Length: 284
Image (cartoon, rainbow, N blue to C red; front, side, top):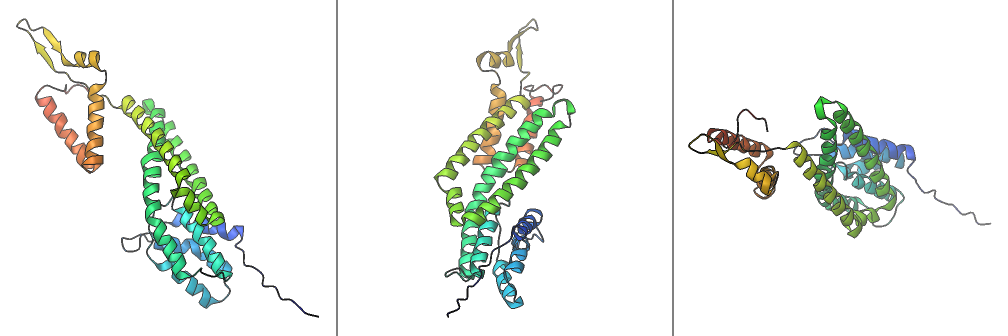
């Protein structure tokens, strides 16, 4: 009689995965520095996984040493990288061929840059401005609803969005990357960018108002030319649109910082008041 010995496959528990995700969610900026960036946050996220997968202390140390390399990405969308490497660590613990330190570090090093670019444009450049635009609209008259809305919605979006990406990265592995950087992901990003542009345009039209007080008078002291009335007849809100486009041009094309743009606008306003183009008694 032949006895067959089966090797039980190691499988990460839901508890360990949740702990790993929460370590990343709350601690991705742990001991943040210019030298290490998010390396220690990555180590914290992988620690509960390594603890569960390996019994030997030396193997635990070897596995954790994999994650001491430099790491930095956009923390929300970058959660998918943590999920993917969680799956790779599980595969390595089960002895799968081709999964080693070089494979894991190569994958995360190759992903952190592109995903950071996508995340910055999608989350920081689109989702956050959309939420802030809605919050500003709800804050009319000093209402606290806007601030409450933003705090609640942003934290729910960040938590459940990051959790979804973590577990999808763990389940799908490389397919998750294909979705993020492939045609489907590109279509989603384009759609959100268009929506974000519409919201930002609506916010600018609602909250920004630039008018001129420039007038020309005849010998009797009567104004025969009111420049703002002419603007209103031809294209209402044209000065506001011009100033918004100027700010966009300076920041997007000339790469000026928001602080420098604001200082430039202060100079423009000051000179405009001196020459009579703006009325100092009006708030803009």
